[in-house]
Each structure stands twice: as structure tokens, then as C-alpha cells.
Length: 232
Image 1 (cartoon, rainbow, N blue to C red):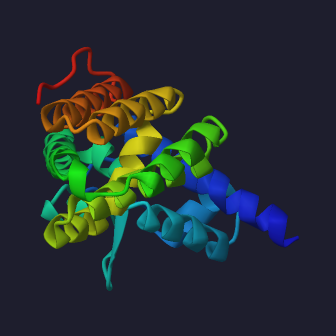
Image 2: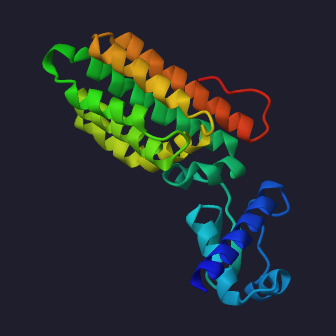
């Protein structure tokens, strides 16, 4: 019974999300009440409440005490939340966030390559191998890519850059999900970064990250139905 109930609330959440994507509900709009949504979907209020909680977790809606549930408007807070929500609400904010995380990763790669003579790249080689061996289009591949960048940050020798990457990690995870089904781009990018870092070419390592950032921005533009990609 629990599994059926779980699938039901997920289906309702997906339908409301679709309506947000299509502009039926726009940023700042108040959603129908629990009772109205329950009647509309023919389910209990508890099921609707679970669906709205799922949407809240995705960053798409917010609960206002005594006022109801509203479609979120884009704000600076978006940079700490899943990008898939921000994509629907404000492309400019997402572009700024991707540019920020790309700049952080580019500096990390540059510093790691510059420290070539003082570093052991065994851990980075292992991280790259794990990424290459992970199943395509899977969460494991995304996690493996995040691990690669975490190891790279450690090799940079800069604690502030390491901390910045930790703060941006969930947003970066969302960015990587957007590249599906183009996940091979991530493997190719990490391979290029590894080769540049391991051979002590800081400029090439940095350029490989920026090229990857442009690919992510293009994926976001394509997802929004935007016919062009933003430039870095």
C-alpha cells in the first residue's frame, strides 16, 4: 500500500511541476488549497501534502504560514538550491551560478596543475578510473564526477577553494544532471583536466573547465527551449 501511495504523490507532484513548466502557475502564484487539489486529483489531502512537500524539496514552491503554497520567485537563495527549480524560474540566476561554479573549478584545476612537482596524483587517477567505470546516465556517475573534483580541490592546496566547492556541491550535482543524456561530456572533460594537471599545464587545465562550463550552459539553454547558449 505504501508503495502505491508513494507513486501517487510523486505523480501528482510531477503534474503540478509540469503545469509550472508550462506557465499554468507562474512565479509568485498561489496554488489551489489542499482541499481543491485533493478534489481535482481525487486523492486525500495527506497525499497532496506529500506532493507539495516534494515540490518544496525541489525548490519550486514555498509554504507561507496562514497564506497557502506559492510558486517560488527567483532569489539569491537559489544558488544554494537545486538548479532544476531555478531553471524554470530564472535563467539569469542559473547562468550566474554556473559561471560561479565554473570559475571556482577552473581555479582549482589551475592550482592543482601548478603544484605538479609537489603532488601525488594517484588519488586523482583512481577518481578518474572510477568515473570512467561508472554506469552511463546514473547517479553513481554523477557522484563519481563530484568525487573527482573533490580530490582535485584537495590537490590545489587551497582550503578556501575546497570550502567553496563544498558549498557549491549540490548546485554542481544539479548541473551535472542537466547534461543527461550527454554525460560523456563529463568524462571527456575530467579526462582533459586530468591530463593537463598531471603534465603540469595549468592554462590547459583551466581552459578545459571553462569549456565544460560552456557545455553546461548550453544544456541549460536547450532544456529551456532557448535556441542559443549563453557565453561565459
